[in-house]
Structure formats: C-alpha cells, structure tokens
Image 1 (cartoon, rainbow, N blue to C red):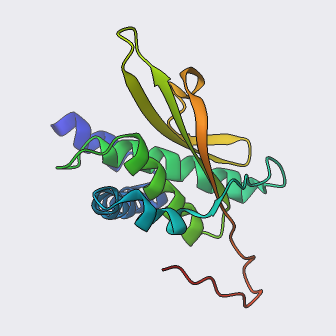
Image 2: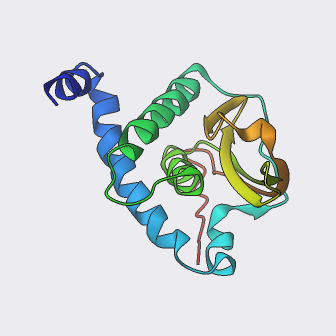
Length: 160
C-alpha cells in the first residue's frame, strides 16, 4: 500500500489531479453504460464519423497521454467494473473537456469457443487512448467521432 501511495505522489501534479477527474468520469460512464445504448449513443458523438489522424499540437499530445495514464490508473481502483467501454467514454469526456477531438470504436469478435465478444477503444489523433491492448483482434462495427469546437470560437455544443 505504501508503495502505491509513493508511486501516486511521484506523478506530476497535473496527472494526480487528472486521476481524481478520471475516477469521477469512470463512475459517470458506468452509470451511462447501464442505460439502453440508444439513449447514450447521441452523447458519444457523430455516428460513422472519424476524427482526423493529424493536426495535433505538442500540448494536445501531452494532454492525451496524461488522460490515458489517468484513466488507466483510476480504473484499477474503482469500486465498480471499469472496463473498455466505460474507460473509452470517460476518456472521451475528459478529452472533450480539453477541446480535443476523439473517435470511439466498437468492435466484435468470436473467442475460441465461438462466443461473441465485444471491445471498445478510443483514438485521438494518431494515439490510442484506451483499449489498445486487444483492439487488433476485433472487427469494427461502430464508430462515433466527437468533434470539439476550437477554444474561443463561441460555438456551443448541446447534448441530450
């Protein structure tokens, strides 16, 4: 336990704060996951739209990496199940808050016993934010791109 506390305290201050933010977003995403998918889909972004793979600034890349790290750390300590879809939704919301676009992918595959499996992962720019470990094993069946207005444009995005 002491080792984990030391590891947490050794993180940069910004990442330590993001871990708490990630924990809250993971909880909210878990609540959303319990609802029918048709109700949460509009909040995931534009269906069948993929955000661009390029055009990221150095600061955005750093923010994406920090969000990814915070989600991975916080998901290990949640009192609820925080697996691929929950992690992807939480990370998407954290990136959206930072005005960084992302694309959520959903895929399916069959295991060795022939049973259907599902997986979700999140990409921002060229970086895979969550779910990179097994994404190559799945066939993409759903894509949701989250556009974010540039800071200062005055554009307001409403979600239901």
